[in-house]
Image (cartoon, rainbow, N blue to C red; front, top):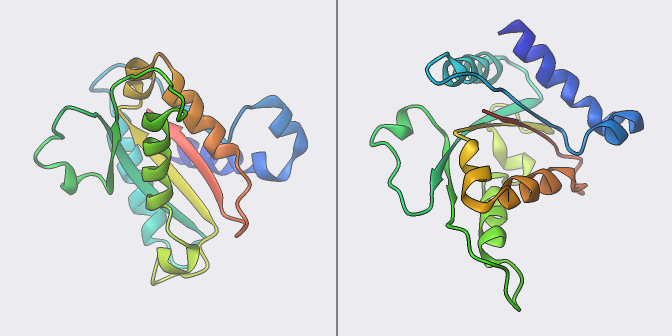
Length: 168
């Protein structure tokens, strides 16, 4: 847990150091392990530690990726803050890529303004998105949703909000 926490906090340096932005596409990293080896448990433990820390300038959000046409597990609300519905692949058209735009819109809706994020700590300026079952982002769209999400992470936000994503 300590190494995971240190890796996340070091990833926030992407916003501070130009050499980090030159080295990495986005403020994110992946956790790759076999199924059943504790990725979700690790993310849940990190969330519990960070969200119970008072005061903390970091808010942790645990997301579950689901195929657009599949139902999530019945008990997902016991474990995850939000669902990230990954739509079925459709080629871009004259209106751009509506499926990608819908995915990005759902992420923007999760990230409500910092003053409303956490009543205990309205000064939240950092968000850690823990994205479980992230392989769906790559599988459904031949990687386009994953790439779009990483470009979305790169966006400068006017409110100095910094976002780090962990794909698991």
